[in-house]
Length: 429
Image (cartoon, rainbow, N blue to C red; front, side):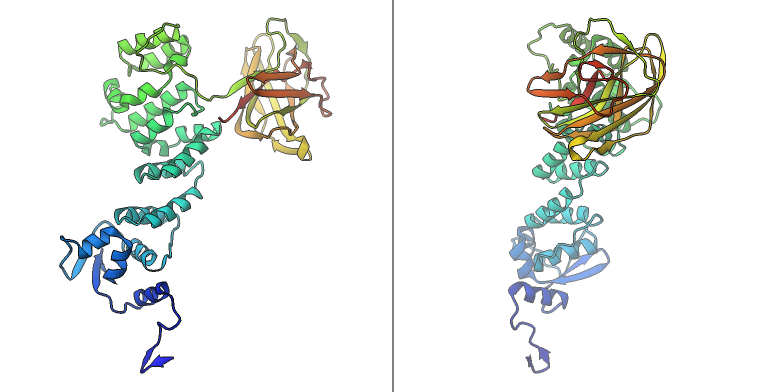
């Protein structure tokens, strides 16, 4: 019903609906903000009732007295989106607006809107976006979001490698890096962590020379170096890969060398505890026993397996041959319990080397679930390889893998003999 010439817009409406109508139609506004080149009108009582920052701005002892209040450093669209949330809980959050809305919500103490942004960001976590979201979570003290990003990184070797090797890694703050590298759950080897931190430090150097002063790098890295587990490295690798970079002092080099060689140093700043890393599960029964010969000629060697807990299969071990060799290797991983569904069928690997056993590392891991049966199928082309006697089950603490005959093998590999001497496994903790 209308009263006079004005529509009765209040009738049957909730408080939020009335606020929305007044805001959208700019009725009875009593405060004006200049945001960029645009003027936005609002109602003091609504803003003060929803934000203690607006309350202080509009009604505090040092409240604004000018007719038009300038709002610097916020785009008009973002400011308007924040007001819409204050008036009627409408959060127009997307990939383009989330950073600006989060910044504005934090600036004006609108916790509910910060939480809305956090919920949205949680749905956007991917391998490519995770560094950016991690930095936002750190900047705005969103601890749950930060932890979720960490979990994604720590629970996959593939993701952690991609994160540390990415261009966006260089944009992370020192505080973010410290939280990542100090954790026992980070599944990367120490050389990879060191190289990534060195790359990050180089990007922050004040000089554009090709050769950066090691002292400047050391100053930038600071205490990050103490979170690298140098003492778990081999002495040869430490001396070959770390010492020549000259970011460690002579005293630190001597301290780490002593720890690698088993010396007890009570006050050492460097941790000697291995992280949650990929492990080799070897099937070989007696590693000192001589290896036999295995004719391959492109025949299919296959083995089935089950595990008692979930893990990620990051690769397999294969026998090489005496002397130098080159193999072309085809690998297929299938889920037998799921209708022999193919989990991995990458392009052929070409491998050259001289080792008796070599690794095939997958670009992406296969998720292995407990009590499901899986199959590894391998075709190799190249010289005659070694073969060995195997255990039919392997254990590492509480982790158990059992191996079974595969109906697909055509070259003779079985649980107790043949090719495929081991797996590369990662168990998220």
